[in-house]
Length: 405
Image (tube, rainbow, N blue to C red; front, side, top):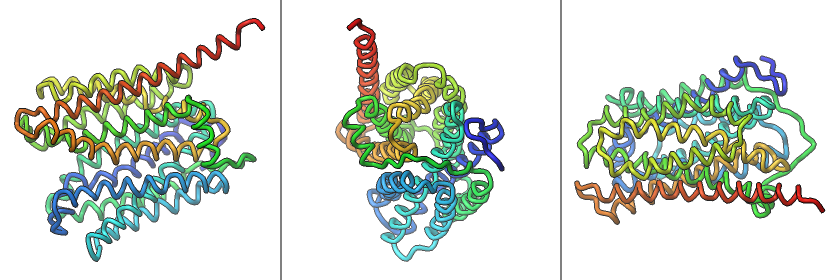
C-alpha cells in the first residue's frame, strides 16, 4: 500500500485506526479476570496482584525515552514497529506459561516496553505521513486506541469466564493479526536531515514553557484515569451496590464518547487554537471528575459521557500542541515523551487513589471516594490553569513583538 506525504487518504487513516484498535484491545483483555489470572493463579495478596498493571507501566516508562532517542537518530521506525508488535504477541503468549510470579511480572514489564514502542512508532509514522491533516489522522488513531481499551475490557470478562488464560491466548492472536496488518499498511519511513534526541528535548523543555504544559496535561489526564481503573469500580460495588455489568456500562459511557469524538476534535484542532481546546476540555473534564465520588449513580449516566467529551476535546489538541511547540525535536522523541508522561501518570494514579480513599475512610458512606475524586478533578483544573498562563505568555510575547521600536 502506497502513502503520499501529507496526503494520507481516508482509507489509509482508517486502516491505521484499525491497527491501533487491534494494538490496544489485548492490553485490557486480562483486566476483568485479573483476580483469577494473578491473585488466585499465583496465590499472592491483593497488593502484590496490583503489580500486574504497575509492571506494564514501568516497562513503558523505561522504554519510551530510549526508543524515542534511538529512532530519531536512526530513522528506522516502520521495521521496528512491526518487530515490536510481533514481540508483543510472543510475550503475551509467554505470560500464559511463566515459571514464577517474578518471571510473570518481568514478562509483563517487557510487554509494556514493546507495546509502547509499537504505539509510539505507529503514531509517529502517521503524524509524518498526514502532513497538514495531522489532527484528523491522530484523532482517528486516538479513537482506535480508546475503542480498543473499551472493547478489551468488555470482551475480556466474557472470554476469561471459564479460564483466565484464554484472555492471554486471544491477546496474542490479535497482536499477530495487528503485526500482519502493520507490515502491509504502515506508512514508509521518511528521511530527515535533523537527528535530535532526548538531550534536545530536555533542553527545549527547560527553555520553553509551551513544551512543558502539554506534557503536564498528558501526565495529569492519565493520572486521573488511574482513579477510574481502581477507585471507580470499587466505589460503585462497595458504596452503591452496582453489579459488574452495569459497572462496565458506566465505564463504556465514558470511553465510547471519548473514542467517537477524538476524530472530529482532532480535525477541529487543525484550524482552531490547540491551547483553547485543551483549556476547555481540561476544565470540563476536571470539574466533572470532582463530582464523581459525590453524586448518586443515576447522575453518573449523564456525568460519564460529559467526561468522555472533555477528554476527547483535549487529547489530540494537546499532542498537536507538543509537536508544534517543539519543532526542533524529533517527532518520535516528542511522541515518546508524551506517552512517557502519560505512563508515569497512570502508574501513580492508582497508588494515590488508594491512599486518598484510605485517608478519607473506606466505609460505606463513601467519604474516601469523595476525597479521592475531588483531588483528581482539582489536579486537572490546576493543569488547566497552566494552559491559561501559557496562553497569556503567548499573547504577551505577540504584543511585545508588535509594539513599535
